[in-house]
Length: 331
Image (cartoon, rainbow, N blue to C red; front, top):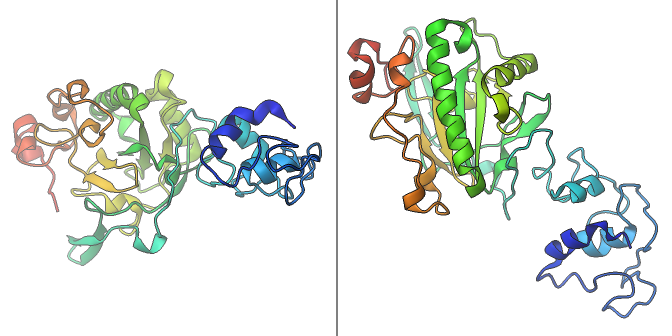
């Protein structure tokens, strides 16, 4: 038996009636090690790094398919890296992300925004879907700074923050000052809460010329603004900036940055309330694992007076920090 995987096997088998033995010739009384339904203790038929016996009796993967969950990683690689070879969302990434998993994933028919609002698009009223608390996040697969496709459902099981940023906001001095302020604060949040089960994800939206970001854009953004956290925070390229894409569904005022809190079961907790006093940038209050005395308690929103051309706060907090003439309309 390949003993590299004993510890992982024990975790998978804990409390499971399907794990009859700990190895060939185990508790099932079969001295050949094959168990009730066979499985050679030395042969690796699909060449994935796991023996047929381990695949059948320990990991319950397919001994004839090197990638049982079809996520692009062999079963052996996933076992070695601590991800689940039977869950397509729980897989390795180049980035050191807080990948987790849920016991059950939502029925796609029940996910997505269940509310809406009417937006005046140049004299043409348009009904746009809107996420609200208790809605369930629809999965999206977007490219990150390493050129990998990242599933949002890879973060099921942890508290997830989505931070939407217009990808060329760092092009001018006022925009850059505001953006770096936001990024610095959110990276502090990431560092503070990571070990409590938290992941920040940045999504770059279209630029002012309505061009979608490329993988080169997200890579450049990550290198410029994330520093030592470049490998810990996914920076994803938005693939749809229409009124019927994910970004629009989270927008209350169509002004970035936009912050969204998502719970461990992919449940929406807060939409576009940003970081003013009286509203919630801090994800800690939504995380039962964080003692109240250890909450981050974000200070006054010093980023707001830097924001250009509009303050990101909703009124009336925006009036306080940016002046009434610099506040966007909230729909």
